[in-house]
Image (cartoon, rainbow, N blue to C red):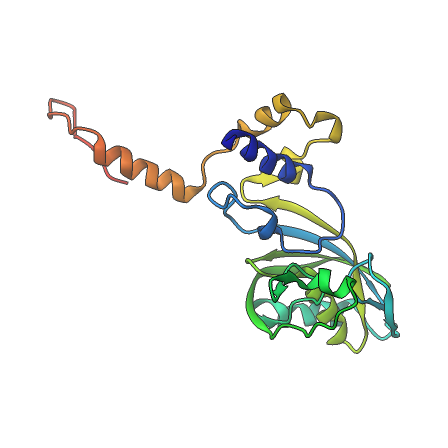
Length: 232
């Protein structure tokens, strides 16, 4: 049963579906000992239109001009959103109010107040393409970060508005889009197992494994040419 659950998690990860993401990736990946490093994402945004969900699945709620935004100005604004920043999560999210997801409450017609801003971390942020109204950014972020909110905030900081057209997870933990993504016709136990073969243990686990092995391994007696155990 545990093996099936594990394979299902990997199945979800390897698919790398190109769809708007409503909740953070780390909430989809439950086994953090396997997928523990920072996610990399590429987001395509559209200037001039804001939606209620902050992505292409929502209804347009605002339109603004974007002709005044230049590539140079956009790149300069990215610096303000790099490092430790404060971010307000989207209303349409997996965050809960009274035990229910806010996105579900909104769809039921209930009023929901935005959660207060909270600290999040952006480790790297770069502009890959700028072809108004579209732009593409590359993001490396920490847990609890919403790229939808980033795109919305970037546009607001430049007196405009925007929403996400496409969000692609290019790397999660040990898995990369280029090396481990499987097309739907290869979503089989055999192909998934083969895709996992090249993946080493996360660095932390490797280090702990070495310590454990060294701890329980009996120390051999020294002889000529034998320097004994070496601790890394």
